[in-house]
Length: 621
Image 1: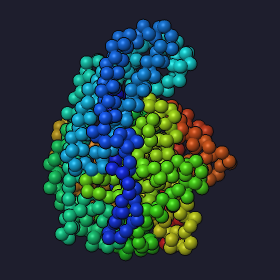
Image 2: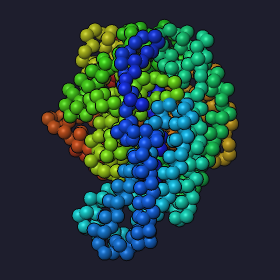
Image 3: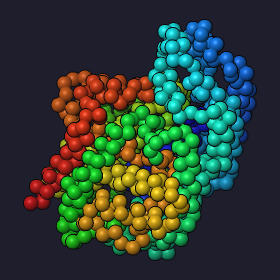
Image 4: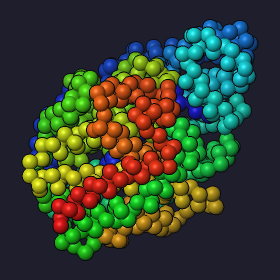
Protein backbone atom coordinates (compact mmCIF):
# COMPACT_ATOMS: atom_id res chain seq x y z
CA UNK A 1 0.00 0.00 0.00
CA UNK A 2 1.55 3.30 -1.02
CA UNK A 3 1.74 5.96 1.65
CA UNK A 4 4.35 8.31 0.23
CA UNK A 5 3.87 11.45 2.28
CA UNK A 6 7.38 11.87 3.60
CA UNK A 7 9.06 12.84 0.33
CA UNK A 8 12.16 10.70 0.49
CA UNK A 9 15.41 11.69 -1.18
CA UNK A 10 14.50 12.44 -4.79
CA UNK A 11 15.19 10.00 -7.57
CA UNK A 12 18.54 10.70 -9.20
CA UNK A 13 18.98 10.20 -12.93
CA UNK A 14 21.96 8.21 -14.07
CA UNK A 15 24.92 10.38 -15.16
CA UNK A 16 24.62 8.75 -18.59
CA UNK A 17 20.80 8.80 -18.85
CA UNK A 18 20.54 10.19 -18.25
CA UNK A 19 22.64 27.50 0.16
CA UNK A 20 21.97 30.53 -2.13
CA UNK A 21 23.64 32.59 -4.79
CA UNK A 22 25.82 31.63 -7.75
CA UNK A 23 29.11 29.86 -8.25
CA UNK A 24 31.77 29.90 -10.91
CA UNK A 25 32.22 26.28 -11.95
CA UNK A 26 35.10 24.77 -13.80
CA UNK A 27 35.51 21.54 -15.71
CA UNK A 28 38.86 20.29 -16.96
CA UNK A 29 40.30 23.67 -16.03
CA UNK A 30 37.96 25.66 -18.28
CA UNK A 31 35.63 28.32 -16.92
CA UNK A 32 31.96 27.57 -17.58
CA UNK A 33 30.78 30.94 -16.28
CA UNK A 34 28.58 31.78 -13.35
CA UNK A 35 26.28 28.94 -12.47
CA UNK A 36 23.30 28.99 -10.11
CA UNK A 37 23.01 27.21 -6.79
CA UNK A 38 19.51 26.71 -5.53
CA UNK A 39 17.85 28.86 -2.89
CA UNK A 40 15.90 26.58 -0.55
CA UNK A 41 14.52 29.47 1.49
CA UNK A 42 11.28 29.21 -0.47
CA UNK A 43 10.77 26.05 1.60
CA UNK A 44 12.46 27.02 4.89
CA UNK A 45 15.03 29.58 5.97
CA UNK A 46 17.26 26.91 7.49
CA UNK A 47 17.35 23.64 9.44
CA UNK A 48 17.04 25.57 12.71
CA UNK A 49 14.30 27.92 11.52
CA UNK A 50 11.43 28.63 13.87
CA UNK A 51 8.96 28.09 11.03
CA UNK A 52 10.17 24.55 10.43
CA UNK A 53 9.99 23.72 14.13
CA UNK A 54 6.49 25.18 14.38
CA UNK A 55 5.33 23.33 11.26
CA UNK A 56 6.57 20.00 12.61
CA UNK A 57 4.76 20.55 15.91
CA UNK A 58 1.58 21.75 14.18
CA UNK A 59 1.39 18.90 11.66
CA UNK A 60 2.04 16.35 14.40
CA UNK A 61 -0.84 17.76 16.41
CA UNK A 62 -3.11 17.98 13.35
CA UNK A 63 -2.35 14.39 12.37
CA UNK A 64 -3.31 13.23 15.85
CA UNK A 65 -6.58 15.16 15.75
CA UNK A 66 -7.31 13.82 12.27
CA UNK A 67 -6.77 10.27 13.49
CA UNK A 68 -9.08 10.80 16.47
CA UNK A 69 -11.76 12.34 14.27
CA UNK A 70 -11.81 9.91 11.36
CA UNK A 71 -10.30 6.52 12.28
CA UNK A 72 -13.12 3.99 12.30
CA UNK A 73 -15.63 6.61 11.15
CA UNK A 74 -15.23 6.70 7.35
CA UNK A 75 -17.82 4.00 6.69
CA UNK A 76 -20.56 5.87 8.50
CA UNK A 77 -19.35 9.18 7.10
CA UNK A 78 -19.60 7.94 3.51
CA UNK A 79 -23.20 6.87 4.05
CA UNK A 80 -24.17 10.47 4.87
CA UNK A 81 -23.12 11.60 1.40
CA UNK A 82 -19.97 12.97 -0.18
CA UNK A 83 -19.66 16.40 1.41
CA UNK A 84 -18.16 15.38 4.75
CA UNK A 85 -16.00 12.71 3.13
CA UNK A 86 -14.68 15.35 0.72
CA UNK A 87 -13.85 17.59 3.69
CA UNK A 88 -11.73 14.80 5.15
CA UNK A 89 -9.91 14.35 1.84
CA UNK A 90 -9.19 18.09 1.68
CA UNK A 91 -7.71 18.01 5.19
CA UNK A 92 -5.65 14.94 4.31
CA UNK A 93 -4.48 16.69 1.14
CA UNK A 94 -3.42 19.78 3.06
CA UNK A 95 -1.40 17.70 5.48
CA UNK A 96 0.21 15.88 2.55
CA UNK A 97 1.41 19.20 1.18
CA UNK A 98 2.86 20.28 4.52
CA UNK A 99 4.58 16.95 5.10
CA UNK A 100 5.94 17.00 1.58
CA UNK A 101 7.35 20.49 2.06
CA UNK A 102 9.26 19.42 5.17
CA UNK A 103 10.50 16.19 3.61
CA UNK A 104 11.51 17.92 0.38
CA UNK A 105 13.54 20.52 2.23
CA UNK A 106 15.44 17.89 4.20
CA UNK A 107 16.04 15.76 1.09
CA UNK A 108 17.27 18.65 -1.05
CA UNK A 109 19.53 20.02 1.67
CA UNK A 110 21.05 16.56 2.05
CA UNK A 111 21.42 16.00 -1.72
CA UNK A 112 23.43 19.22 -2.01
CA UNK A 113 26.10 17.72 0.27
CA UNK A 114 25.61 14.14 1.42
CA UNK A 115 29.10 14.14 2.94
CA UNK A 116 28.16 16.73 5.57
CA UNK A 117 27.41 14.84 8.82
CA UNK A 118 25.23 17.70 10.10
CA UNK A 119 23.02 17.56 7.01
CA UNK A 120 22.97 13.78 7.09
CA UNK A 121 21.80 13.82 10.71
CA UNK A 122 19.18 16.46 9.94
CA UNK A 123 17.89 14.39 7.02
CA UNK A 124 17.75 11.24 9.14
CA UNK A 125 16.05 13.01 12.05
CA UNK A 126 13.42 14.55 9.77
CA UNK A 127 12.69 11.20 8.16
CA UNK A 128 12.13 9.66 11.58
CA UNK A 129 9.83 12.48 12.66
CA UNK A 130 7.83 12.36 9.44
CA UNK A 131 7.50 8.59 9.66
CA UNK A 132 6.11 8.99 13.17
CA UNK A 133 3.62 11.59 12.01
CA UNK A 134 2.50 9.71 8.91
CA UNK A 135 2.01 6.56 10.98
CA UNK A 136 -0.97 8.39 12.50
CA UNK A 137 -2.35 8.95 8.99
CA UNK A 138 -1.74 5.46 7.69
CA UNK A 139 -5.24 4.33 8.58
CA UNK A 140 -6.85 6.78 6.16
CA UNK A 141 -6.08 5.29 2.72
CA UNK A 142 -6.48 1.78 4.16
CA UNK A 143 -9.89 2.52 5.64
CA UNK A 144 -10.91 4.48 2.54
CA UNK A 145 -10.26 1.36 0.48
CA UNK A 146 -12.51 -0.69 2.73
CA UNK A 147 -15.53 1.43 1.81
CA UNK A 148 -18.13 -0.52 -0.14
CA UNK A 149 -18.11 0.21 -3.87
CA UNK A 150 -21.78 1.17 -4.04
CA UNK A 151 -21.53 3.44 -0.99
CA UNK A 152 -18.48 5.21 -2.40
CA UNK A 153 -20.07 5.53 -5.83
CA UNK A 154 -23.09 7.20 -4.29
CA UNK A 155 -20.90 9.56 -2.28
CA UNK A 156 -18.94 10.54 -5.39
CA UNK A 157 -22.07 12.03 -6.89
CA UNK A 158 -21.32 14.97 -4.63
CA UNK A 159 -19.34 17.52 -6.67
CA UNK A 160 -16.81 18.16 -3.89
CA UNK A 161 -15.85 14.49 -3.67
CA UNK A 162 -16.11 13.91 -7.42
CA UNK A 163 -13.17 16.27 -7.87
CA UNK A 164 -10.99 13.64 -6.21
CA UNK A 165 -12.24 10.77 -8.38
CA UNK A 166 -8.86 10.25 -10.14
CA UNK A 167 -7.11 9.93 -6.77
CA UNK A 168 -9.82 7.62 -5.46
CA UNK A 169 -9.62 5.45 -8.59
CA UNK A 170 -5.85 5.15 -8.21
CA UNK A 171 -6.23 4.33 -4.53
CA UNK A 172 -8.72 1.58 -5.30
CA UNK A 173 -6.24 -0.04 -7.71
CA UNK A 174 -4.03 -0.73 -4.68
CA UNK A 175 -6.84 -2.28 -2.67
CA UNK A 176 -6.06 -5.92 -3.61
CA UNK A 177 -2.51 -5.51 -2.28
CA UNK A 178 -3.11 -3.77 1.03
CA UNK A 179 -2.56 -5.64 4.28
CA UNK A 180 -4.06 -5.49 7.74
CA UNK A 181 -3.61 -2.13 9.43
CA UNK A 182 -1.11 -3.35 12.01
CA UNK A 183 1.08 -4.99 9.38
CA UNK A 184 0.97 -1.84 7.24
CA UNK A 185 1.95 0.16 10.30
CA UNK A 186 4.89 -2.15 10.97
CA UNK A 187 6.09 -1.94 7.36
CA UNK A 188 5.78 1.83 7.46
CA UNK A 189 7.60 2.38 10.75
CA UNK A 190 10.42 -0.02 9.88
CA UNK A 191 11.06 1.71 6.53
CA UNK A 192 13.41 4.18 8.25
CA UNK A 193 15.62 1.42 9.64
CA UNK A 194 15.08 -0.83 6.62
CA UNK A 195 15.02 0.23 2.97
CA UNK A 196 15.54 3.91 3.83
CA UNK A 197 18.69 3.15 5.80
CA UNK A 198 20.18 1.00 3.03
CA UNK A 199 19.41 3.74 0.48
CA UNK A 200 21.18 6.26 2.65
CA UNK A 201 24.19 3.97 3.07
CA UNK A 202 24.44 3.63 -0.72
CA UNK A 203 24.16 7.40 -1.24
CA UNK A 204 26.79 8.34 1.31
CA UNK A 205 29.17 5.60 0.20
CA UNK A 206 28.97 6.61 -3.47
CA UNK A 207 29.48 10.26 -2.62
CA UNK A 208 32.54 9.46 -0.51
CA UNK A 209 34.28 7.27 -3.12
CA UNK A 210 37.39 8.75 -4.72
CA UNK A 211 39.06 7.53 -7.89
CA UNK A 212 42.82 7.93 -8.38
CA UNK A 213 43.63 9.03 -11.92
CA UNK A 214 47.24 10.00 -12.41
CA UNK A 215 47.59 10.97 -8.78
CA UNK A 216 44.42 13.10 -8.86
CA UNK A 217 41.58 12.06 -6.56
CA UNK A 218 38.24 12.52 -8.37
CA UNK A 219 34.62 12.02 -7.34
CA UNK A 220 32.33 9.59 -9.17
CA UNK A 221 30.76 12.36 -11.25
CA UNK A 222 34.09 13.75 -12.45
CA UNK A 223 35.45 10.26 -13.13
CA UNK A 224 32.44 9.27 -15.22
CA UNK A 225 32.87 12.51 -17.13
CA UNK A 226 36.36 11.34 -18.15
CA UNK A 227 34.71 8.53 -20.14
CA UNK A 228 33.69 11.19 -22.67
CA UNK A 229 37.16 12.78 -22.87
CA UNK A 230 38.80 13.12 -26.29
CA UNK A 231 41.96 11.44 -25.02
CA UNK A 232 41.63 7.65 -25.23
CA UNK A 233 44.22 7.17 -22.50
CA UNK A 234 42.18 9.32 -20.12
CA UNK A 235 39.08 7.28 -20.91
CA UNK A 236 40.94 4.06 -20.21
CA UNK A 237 42.42 5.40 -16.98
CA UNK A 238 38.97 6.48 -15.81
CA UNK A 239 37.46 3.08 -16.59
CA UNK A 240 40.27 1.28 -14.79
CA UNK A 241 39.95 3.58 -11.77
CA UNK A 242 36.21 2.93 -11.64
CA UNK A 243 36.76 -0.82 -11.82
CA UNK A 244 39.43 -0.73 -9.10
CA UNK A 245 37.33 1.25 -6.63
CA UNK A 246 34.11 -0.61 -7.38
CA UNK A 247 35.98 -3.88 -6.99
CA UNK A 248 37.34 -2.78 -3.64
CA UNK A 249 33.84 -2.00 -2.41
CA UNK A 250 32.06 -4.89 -4.10
CA UNK A 251 31.20 -6.77 -0.90
CA UNK A 252 29.30 -3.75 0.42
CA UNK A 253 27.38 -3.13 -2.81
CA UNK A 254 26.61 -6.84 -3.10
CA UNK A 255 25.21 -6.83 0.43
CA UNK A 256 23.10 -3.73 -0.25
CA UNK A 257 21.72 -5.27 -3.45
CA UNK A 258 20.95 -8.63 -1.83
CA UNK A 259 19.31 -7.00 1.18
CA UNK A 260 17.08 -4.66 -0.82
CA UNK A 261 16.10 -7.40 -3.26
CA UNK A 262 15.10 -9.63 -0.35
CA UNK A 263 13.26 -6.75 1.31
CA UNK A 264 11.26 -6.25 -1.87
CA UNK A 265 10.57 -9.98 -2.23
CA UNK A 266 9.14 -10.09 1.31
CA UNK A 267 6.92 -7.08 0.68
CA UNK A 268 5.75 -8.38 -2.71
CA UNK A 269 5.01 -11.82 -1.28
CA UNK A 270 2.95 -10.46 1.60
CA UNK A 271 1.03 -8.16 -0.71
CA UNK A 272 0.37 -10.82 -3.33
CA UNK A 273 2.20 -9.43 -6.35
CA UNK A 274 2.77 -12.20 -8.89
CA UNK A 275 5.75 -10.80 -10.79
CA UNK A 276 8.86 -9.07 -9.44
CA UNK A 277 8.01 -5.87 -11.37
CA UNK A 278 4.25 -5.81 -10.80
CA UNK A 279 4.46 -3.31 -7.95
CA UNK A 280 6.29 -0.89 -10.24
CA UNK A 281 3.75 -1.40 -13.00
CA UNK A 282 0.99 -0.62 -10.51
CA UNK A 283 2.76 2.54 -9.38
CA UNK A 284 3.22 3.54 -13.02
CA UNK A 285 -0.43 2.75 -13.80
CA UNK A 286 0.71 0.75 -16.80
CA UNK A 287 -0.27 -2.79 -17.68
CA UNK A 288 2.33 -5.57 -17.48
CA UNK A 289 1.61 -6.66 -21.05
CA UNK A 290 2.36 -3.13 -22.32
CA UNK A 291 5.78 -3.19 -20.67
CA UNK A 292 6.44 -6.74 -21.88
CA UNK A 293 5.65 -5.63 -25.42
CA UNK A 294 8.05 -2.69 -25.09
CA UNK A 295 10.84 -4.91 -23.78
CA UNK A 296 10.33 -7.52 -26.49
CA UNK A 297 10.31 -4.86 -29.23
CA UNK A 298 13.53 -3.26 -28.00
CA UNK A 299 15.34 -6.57 -27.55
CA UNK A 300 14.29 -7.61 -31.05
CA UNK A 301 15.72 -4.33 -32.38
CA UNK A 302 19.12 -4.65 -30.67
CA UNK A 303 20.86 -5.79 -33.90
CA UNK A 304 19.23 -3.00 -35.94
CA UNK A 305 20.08 -0.29 -33.41
CA UNK A 306 22.93 -0.64 -30.92
CA UNK A 307 24.79 -3.50 -32.66
CA UNK A 308 24.72 -1.67 -35.97
CA UNK A 309 25.57 1.76 -34.57
CA UNK A 310 28.54 0.63 -32.48
CA UNK A 311 29.96 -1.27 -35.46
CA UNK A 312 29.64 1.96 -37.43
CA UNK A 313 31.32 3.98 -34.67
CA UNK A 314 34.16 1.48 -34.42
CA UNK A 315 34.86 2.00 -38.15
CA UNK A 316 34.80 5.77 -37.67
CA UNK A 317 37.42 5.41 -34.95
CA UNK A 318 39.56 3.03 -37.00
CA UNK A 319 39.02 0.02 -34.75
CA UNK A 320 37.56 -3.44 -35.17
CA UNK A 321 35.95 -3.22 -31.76
CA UNK A 322 35.43 -0.47 -29.20
CA UNK A 323 36.65 -1.03 -25.66
CA UNK A 324 33.83 -0.40 -23.22
CA UNK A 325 35.45 2.90 -22.19
CA UNK A 326 35.22 4.12 -25.80
CA UNK A 327 31.47 3.57 -26.09
CA UNK A 328 30.69 7.22 -25.31
CA UNK A 329 33.89 8.67 -26.78
CA UNK A 330 33.37 11.88 -28.78
CA UNK A 331 33.62 11.64 -32.53
CA UNK A 332 36.38 13.51 -34.40
CA UNK A 333 33.67 15.61 -36.04
CA UNK A 334 32.34 16.89 -32.71
CA UNK A 335 33.08 20.51 -31.95
CA UNK A 336 35.85 20.92 -29.41
CA UNK A 337 35.64 23.08 -26.34
CA UNK A 338 33.04 23.25 -23.63
CA UNK A 339 29.62 24.87 -23.64
CA UNK A 340 29.33 27.61 -21.03
CA UNK A 341 26.33 27.74 -18.72
CA UNK A 342 24.90 30.92 -20.28
CA UNK A 343 25.10 29.38 -23.75
CA UNK A 344 23.40 26.19 -22.54
CA UNK A 345 20.61 28.27 -21.02
CA UNK A 346 20.05 30.11 -24.31
CA UNK A 347 20.09 26.89 -26.32
CA UNK A 348 17.39 25.23 -24.23
CA UNK A 349 15.19 28.30 -23.77
CA UNK A 350 15.31 29.05 -27.51
CA UNK A 351 14.25 25.49 -28.31
CA UNK A 352 11.43 25.56 -25.76
CA UNK A 353 10.28 29.01 -26.92
CA UNK A 354 10.12 27.97 -30.56
CA UNK A 355 7.70 25.22 -29.57
CA UNK A 356 5.59 27.10 -27.03
CA UNK A 357 6.38 30.48 -25.41
CA UNK A 358 4.67 29.28 -22.22
CA UNK A 359 7.19 26.46 -21.88
CA UNK A 360 10.11 28.86 -22.20
CA UNK A 361 8.52 31.27 -19.73
CA UNK A 362 8.15 28.55 -17.11
CA UNK A 363 11.67 27.22 -17.77
CA UNK A 364 13.13 30.73 -17.46
CA UNK A 365 11.94 30.91 -13.87
CA UNK A 366 14.27 28.07 -12.97
CA UNK A 367 17.27 30.14 -14.06
CA UNK A 368 16.13 33.48 -12.68
CA UNK A 369 14.71 32.35 -9.33
CA UNK A 370 17.52 30.04 -8.16
CA UNK A 371 15.56 26.83 -8.69
CA UNK A 372 18.64 25.09 -10.15
CA UNK A 373 21.79 23.82 -8.44
CA UNK A 374 24.19 23.40 -11.34
CA UNK A 375 27.90 23.17 -10.43
CA UNK A 376 29.86 20.08 -9.44
CA UNK A 377 30.84 20.20 -5.76
CA UNK A 378 32.49 17.93 -3.25
CA UNK A 379 29.87 15.84 -1.50
CA UNK A 380 27.06 16.68 -3.91
CA UNK A 381 24.81 13.87 -5.14
CA UNK A 382 25.88 12.62 -8.58
CA UNK A 383 23.63 12.67 -11.62
CA UNK A 384 20.65 14.96 -12.02
CA UNK A 385 17.01 15.24 -11.01
CA UNK A 386 14.04 17.55 -10.91
CA UNK A 387 12.21 17.31 -7.60
CA UNK A 388 8.60 18.57 -7.70
CA UNK A 389 8.56 19.28 -3.92
CA UNK A 390 4.90 20.27 -3.34
CA UNK A 391 2.28 22.20 -5.32
CA UNK A 392 2.36 25.09 -2.84
CA UNK A 393 6.04 25.65 -3.69
CA UNK A 394 7.89 24.83 -6.92
CA UNK A 395 10.31 22.21 -8.31
CA UNK A 396 14.07 22.25 -7.84
CA UNK A 397 16.62 20.90 -10.32
CA UNK A 398 19.97 19.38 -9.36
CA UNK A 399 22.68 18.99 -11.98
CA UNK A 400 26.41 18.40 -12.16
CA UNK A 401 27.06 20.59 -15.19
CA UNK A 402 30.46 20.13 -16.85
CA UNK A 403 29.97 21.76 -20.24
CA UNK A 404 29.62 18.69 -22.43
CA UNK A 405 26.88 18.46 -25.11
CA UNK A 406 25.33 15.67 -23.03
CA UNK A 407 25.09 18.10 -20.12
CA UNK A 408 23.06 20.45 -22.29
CA UNK A 409 20.71 17.59 -23.12
CA UNK A 410 20.50 16.72 -19.42
CA UNK A 411 19.51 20.34 -18.73
CA UNK A 412 16.81 20.09 -21.40
CA UNK A 413 15.70 16.76 -19.90
CA UNK A 414 15.38 18.03 -16.33
CA UNK A 415 13.67 21.24 -17.42
CA UNK A 416 11.14 19.07 -19.23
CA UNK A 417 10.39 17.48 -15.86
CA UNK A 418 10.34 20.90 -14.21
CA UNK A 419 7.87 22.43 -16.67
CA UNK A 420 5.67 19.34 -16.32
CA UNK A 421 5.73 19.61 -12.53
CA UNK A 422 4.85 23.31 -12.59
CA UNK A 423 1.94 22.75 -14.98
CA UNK A 424 0.58 19.77 -13.02
CA UNK A 425 0.78 21.55 -9.66
CA UNK A 426 -2.75 22.91 -10.04
CA UNK A 427 -4.06 19.36 -9.57
CA UNK A 428 -3.02 19.52 -5.92
CA UNK A 429 -0.83 17.29 -3.73
CA UNK A 430 -2.84 14.11 -4.28
CA UNK A 431 -3.26 14.32 -8.06
CA UNK A 432 -0.29 16.32 -9.35
CA UNK A 433 2.19 13.39 -9.17
CA UNK A 434 2.57 11.66 -12.53
CA UNK A 435 3.46 8.01 -13.21
CA UNK A 436 7.12 7.62 -14.14
CA UNK A 437 6.37 6.57 -17.71
CA UNK A 438 4.59 9.84 -18.51
CA UNK A 439 7.00 11.89 -16.40
CA UNK A 440 9.86 10.66 -18.59
CA UNK A 441 7.83 11.49 -21.69
CA UNK A 442 7.90 15.18 -20.73
CA UNK A 443 11.64 15.17 -20.09
CA UNK A 444 12.54 13.30 -23.27
CA UNK A 445 10.30 15.63 -25.30
CA UNK A 446 12.33 18.54 -23.91
CA UNK A 447 15.49 16.84 -25.14
CA UNK A 448 13.97 16.27 -28.57
CA UNK A 449 12.99 19.92 -28.92
CA UNK A 450 16.54 20.98 -28.11
CA UNK A 451 18.10 18.45 -30.46
CA UNK A 452 15.86 19.43 -33.37
CA UNK A 453 16.62 23.12 -32.79
CA UNK A 454 20.36 22.46 -32.83
CA UNK A 455 20.02 20.29 -35.94
CA UNK A 456 18.56 23.21 -37.90
CA UNK A 457 21.67 25.21 -37.00
CA UNK A 458 24.14 22.57 -38.24
CA UNK A 459 25.66 24.31 -41.27
CA UNK A 460 28.02 21.58 -42.51
CA UNK A 461 27.71 17.84 -43.16
CA UNK A 462 30.30 17.19 -40.42
CA UNK A 463 28.31 19.21 -37.90
CA UNK A 464 25.12 17.39 -38.85
CA UNK A 465 26.83 14.02 -38.59
CA UNK A 466 28.17 14.85 -35.12
CA UNK A 467 24.73 15.94 -33.90
CA UNK A 468 22.99 12.90 -35.36
CA UNK A 469 25.55 10.53 -33.86
CA UNK A 470 25.27 12.22 -30.46
CA UNK A 471 21.48 11.93 -30.56
CA UNK A 472 21.62 8.27 -31.60
CA UNK A 473 23.96 7.55 -28.69
CA UNK A 474 21.60 9.33 -26.30
CA UNK A 475 18.68 7.33 -27.69
CA UNK A 476 20.59 4.07 -27.32
CA UNK A 477 21.45 5.02 -23.74
CA UNK A 478 17.80 5.84 -23.11
CA UNK A 479 16.24 2.83 -24.83
CA UNK A 480 18.69 -0.05 -25.26
CA UNK A 481 20.74 0.57 -22.12
CA UNK A 482 17.69 1.07 -19.90
CA UNK A 483 15.95 -2.07 -21.16
CA UNK A 484 19.20 -3.94 -20.51
CA UNK A 485 19.13 -2.48 -16.99
CA UNK A 486 15.55 -3.68 -16.61
CA UNK A 487 16.54 -7.15 -17.82
CA UNK A 488 19.42 -7.20 -15.34
CA UNK A 489 17.11 -6.22 -12.49
CA UNK A 490 14.59 -8.89 -13.41
CA UNK A 491 17.24 -11.61 -13.44
CA UNK A 492 18.72 -10.41 -10.15
CA UNK A 493 15.37 -10.26 -8.34
CA UNK A 494 14.26 -13.62 -9.72
CA UNK A 495 17.56 -15.27 -8.78
CA UNK A 496 17.48 -13.69 -5.31
CA UNK A 497 14.37 -15.72 -4.53
CA UNK A 498 16.58 -18.81 -4.55
CA UNK A 499 19.20 -17.33 -2.20
CA UNK A 500 21.88 -14.67 -1.95
CA UNK A 501 23.82 -13.75 -5.06
CA UNK A 502 27.60 -13.53 -4.93
CA UNK A 503 29.48 -10.59 -6.43
CA UNK A 504 30.69 -12.94 -9.18
CA UNK A 505 27.16 -13.99 -10.04
CA UNK A 506 25.96 -10.39 -10.18
CA UNK A 507 28.88 -9.64 -12.50
CA UNK A 508 28.00 -12.59 -14.73
CA UNK A 509 24.38 -11.45 -15.09
CA UNK A 510 25.55 -7.90 -15.80
CA UNK A 511 28.00 -8.97 -18.52
CA UNK A 512 25.46 -11.28 -20.13
CA UNK A 513 22.78 -8.62 -20.57
CA UNK A 514 25.35 -6.02 -21.63
CA UNK A 515 26.77 -8.30 -24.32
CA UNK A 516 23.30 -8.98 -25.65
CA UNK A 517 22.33 -5.31 -25.75
CA UNK A 518 25.57 -3.67 -26.91
CA UNK A 519 26.57 -6.30 -29.46
CA UNK A 520 29.84 -7.71 -30.80
CA UNK A 521 31.38 -4.32 -31.64
CA UNK A 522 31.80 -3.48 -27.94
CA UNK A 523 34.66 -5.25 -26.17
CA UNK A 524 33.81 -5.57 -22.47
CA UNK A 525 37.26 -5.56 -20.88
CA UNK A 526 38.12 -6.93 -17.42
CA UNK A 527 36.69 -4.73 -14.68
CA UNK A 528 33.45 -3.93 -16.46
CA UNK A 529 31.73 -6.72 -14.56
CA UNK A 530 31.61 -4.39 -11.53
CA UNK A 531 29.85 -1.49 -13.23
CA UNK A 532 26.38 -2.60 -12.13
CA UNK A 533 27.07 -1.38 -8.63
CA UNK A 534 26.93 2.39 -9.24
CA UNK A 535 23.53 2.57 -10.96
CA UNK A 536 21.35 4.44 -8.42
CA UNK A 537 18.02 3.33 -9.94
CA UNK A 538 18.60 -0.26 -8.81
CA UNK A 539 18.77 0.96 -5.21
CA UNK A 540 16.34 3.87 -5.04
CA UNK A 541 13.57 2.79 -7.43
CA UNK A 542 13.58 -0.86 -8.52
CA UNK A 543 12.44 -1.29 -12.14
CA UNK A 544 12.24 2.46 -12.68
CA UNK A 545 14.49 2.20 -15.73
CA UNK A 546 11.99 1.01 -18.33
CA UNK A 547 10.22 4.37 -17.94
CA UNK A 548 13.06 5.98 -19.91
CA UNK A 549 12.57 3.64 -22.85
CA UNK A 550 8.80 4.09 -22.60
CA UNK A 551 9.24 7.86 -22.73
CA UNK A 552 11.75 7.82 -25.59
CA UNK A 553 9.64 5.61 -27.86
CA UNK A 554 6.49 7.52 -27.01
CA UNK A 555 8.19 10.86 -27.72
CA UNK A 556 9.48 9.61 -31.07
CA UNK A 557 5.91 8.85 -32.08
CA UNK A 558 4.60 12.03 -30.48
CA UNK A 559 7.15 14.19 -32.27
CA UNK A 560 6.22 12.65 -35.60
CA UNK A 561 2.62 13.72 -34.93
CA UNK A 562 3.88 17.21 -34.06
CA UNK A 563 5.87 17.57 -37.29
CA UNK A 564 2.79 16.62 -39.32
CA UNK A 565 0.20 18.31 -37.12
CA UNK A 566 -2.11 21.15 -37.73
CA UNK A 567 -2.10 24.09 -35.35
CA UNK A 568 -3.00 23.25 -31.81
CA UNK A 569 -0.48 20.50 -31.06
CA UNK A 570 1.41 22.59 -28.49
CA UNK A 571 -1.80 23.39 -26.64
CA UNK A 572 -2.79 19.72 -26.53
CA UNK A 573 0.69 18.79 -25.33
CA UNK A 574 0.64 21.34 -22.50
CA UNK A 575 -2.85 20.16 -21.54
CA UNK A 576 -1.47 16.63 -21.31
CA UNK A 577 1.25 17.80 -18.92
CA UNK A 578 -1.18 19.86 -16.87
CA UNK A 579 -3.34 16.78 -16.30
CA UNK A 580 -0.71 15.45 -13.89
CA UNK A 581 -1.85 12.11 -12.50
CA UNK A 582 -5.55 12.57 -13.24
CA UNK A 583 -5.61 10.49 -16.45
CA UNK A 584 -4.39 7.08 -17.65
CA UNK A 585 -1.80 6.97 -20.43
CA UNK A 586 -4.41 5.72 -22.90
CA UNK A 587 -6.65 8.71 -22.21
CA UNK A 588 -3.77 11.18 -22.36
CA UNK A 589 -2.50 9.94 -25.73
CA UNK A 590 -5.91 9.69 -27.39
CA UNK A 591 -5.94 13.33 -28.63
CA UNK A 592 -2.74 12.59 -30.55
CA UNK A 593 -4.04 9.39 -32.14
CA UNK A 594 -1.53 7.26 -30.23
CA UNK A 595 -2.12 4.10 -28.22
CA UNK A 596 0.63 2.35 -26.24
CA UNK A 597 -1.45 -0.83 -26.10
CA UNK A 598 -1.29 -1.14 -29.90
CA UNK A 599 1.15 -3.98 -30.75
CA UNK A 600 2.77 -1.85 -33.47
CA UNK A 601 3.22 1.24 -31.29
CA UNK A 602 6.70 0.46 -30.01
CA UNK A 603 8.01 -0.55 -33.44
CA UNK A 604 6.95 2.89 -34.71
CA UNK A 605 8.98 4.65 -32.02
CA UNK A 606 12.02 2.44 -32.53
CA UNK A 607 11.98 3.00 -36.28
CA UNK A 608 12.83 6.67 -35.67
CA UNK A 609 16.14 5.55 -34.14
CA UNK A 610 16.76 3.09 -36.96
CA UNK A 611 16.12 5.81 -39.55
CA UNK A 612 18.72 8.08 -37.94
CA UNK A 613 21.27 5.26 -38.10
CA UNK A 614 20.30 4.75 -41.76
CA UNK A 615 21.12 8.41 -42.40
CA UNK A 616 24.48 8.09 -40.65
CA UNK A 617 25.34 5.02 -42.71
CA UNK A 618 24.41 6.88 -45.90
CA UNK A 619 26.67 9.79 -44.91
CA UNK A 620 29.49 7.30 -44.35
CA UNK A 621 29.06 5.60 -47.72
